[in-house]
Image (cartoon, rainbow, N blue to C red; front, side, top):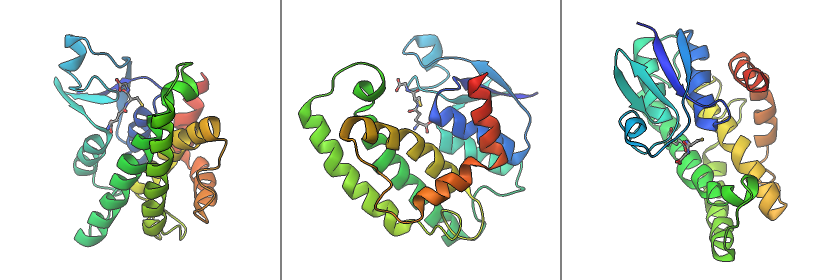
Length: 207
Ligand SMILES: N[C@@H](CCC(=O)N[C@@H](CS)C(=O)NCC(=O)O)C(=O)O
């Protein structure tokens, strides 16, 4: 049975998961399903977030879990390195991108893009925590030429979809360039924007 990808195309995590399907060449079907706190949606995705996938009636949420599942059912080309330490270092970078940059910037999302207001305290803590997150990510990023070294990995998709959202929020709220301090990061994001999987995901948003 074909795997179904539930969510909405404007979501960066939905986009990341969709790019994983393209990278793997695993067939899938898109189901338009916005985030919701309704019981029927929570049964599919326990925090009510997108994306989730449906495999033979079983639902799975969290973009990392989805990527890991795809990496097991279709091992080639690998999304994560096979070497245990290289794999763990890749996941370390992914976790800092998600927890210490993306999720931190997201605190200001309601004001940046949804016409709501965020308190000055939240803005202040966002700025302070983002500086720490960017320092951590800057220390781990290799950019030679890819995020974790010579080959494209899942960390590259996290770079593209973390900064796609976080940079926009930081520009809007603080009028600053989030990527400025990490040399080669901008170049990496530009390179990734030309990757087939990402181009296909982004092109479909306009349709
Ligand atoms: N950790 C989650 C994050 C997913 C996420 O934040 N999704 C957003 C859209 S990009 C969402 O559904 N937001 C609605 C909500 O938080 O209720 C993942 O990896 O899938």
